[in-house]
Image 1 (cartoon, rainbow, N blue to C red):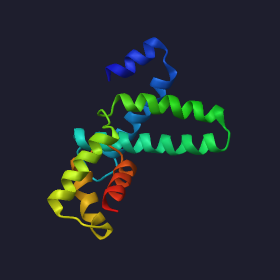
Image 2: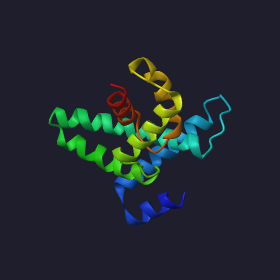
Image 3: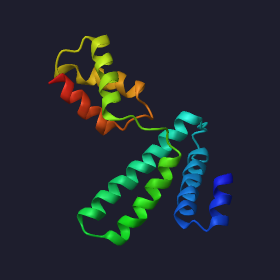
Image 4: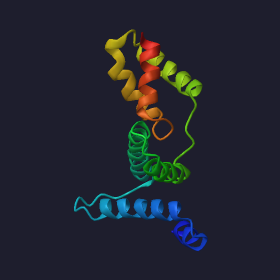
Length: 141
């Protein structure tokens, strides 16, 4: 990993800590006994999961006034975002979800599961599930 070596040379502690965490997660998946092969898509999902964990922790620390812990989570979240694809803005997500609704012929909240399934596949890696869900709910109501 050239980024790991660069972080070591630059003495960039947040990047070093985060890249090591990514490497550890990848090694865990490779050696968990399920013979799972990691491809680019599954690596992105892994990093997204790590980013979501950091974001959840950050929200909790900010709510409880623990800025000392929130700083660490913020730093790691920024490093993780470097390894994720560009996230779409809400307007682009709304357009894609509208297209999915038109394709499926969804007419109300009863069709939310069908729309979420297709929209999540189409927006995989480009938007988080919470944002997609909010847009789908807004368009179906």
